[in-house]
Length: 100
Image (cartoon, rainbow, N blue to C red; front, side, top):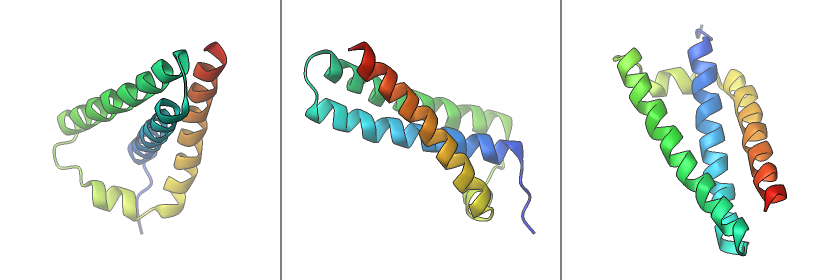
């Protein structure tokens, strides 16, 4: 049986939000104009910074962490985390679009 941990949930939450932010940022840069393009660029840069920071913190805190074992086993648990992470990314995306 797999072990569902808060670390796995937070990891999937961060990874899904980062992927969503990057993809939405790329679409915003491609299709947007003016300030919207700046917002899309910000989302893409933010996603890269967050993913690097998460990787560095993960390696410092847990040196023997196996991403494959921790992410692939509890698929249903991670699906819930991905939906929440995508929602967070969507809120950031909408906030940037409304401000521009």
